[in-house]
Image (cartoon, rainbow, N blue to C red; front, side):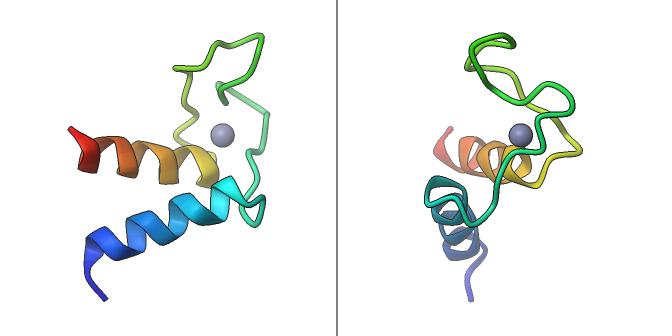
Length: 55
Ligand SMILES: [Zn+2]
């Protein structure tokens, strides 16, 4: 599978709730803001990979 396809699939998993944020650090929410990312969170890592792809 292409890397881009995997990144999109990971993002879908986050969007559908299959992969949830850990909410222990800087996950995006009302408190941290929508641009916050936690490098230890699988959901945040999926978002960051998609953001790199979208640049
Ligand atoms: Zn997160």
